[in-house]
Length: 169
Image 1 (tube, rainbow, N blue to C red):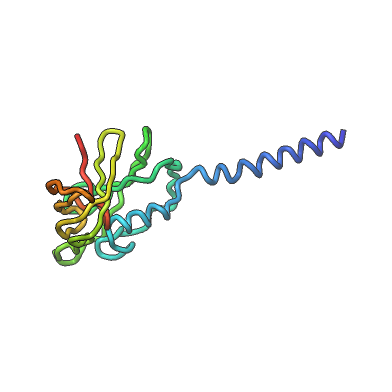
Image 2: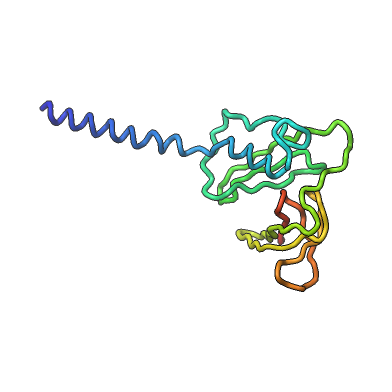
């Protein structure tokens, strides 16, 4: 009788040891959201133009299987919408620290810089490299030209340093 109990006890302990990391890994890393918002805004946490505070560590967000999507929410670039772009994914609103004076936004893309151009639609994203023909701050619309082509320039919104894009209806 004892060997069977020992085997069952070892089996149960092994199942718990395997399940514990799985349960812990089931939640999204909140510090990765803080870092993504910092890259998106171009300003560190707590400073002007950056997230006002870190994401509340009490949140238990489901692990997002794809990279999170960030975009400005509302007017005046005062809130960043962070979302898990999968069916049934979560949304999170991150308030931005307001500036004391109405200073112009600093450019995060320089003229001549190589950028990633992303075009997003319902359920898809296409991206390619291009060249910025104008400097721009996050939220500005600038002219860009796809790399290796002599086509006319297109206009795209500055999403974050090194990335511009547009949404299709």
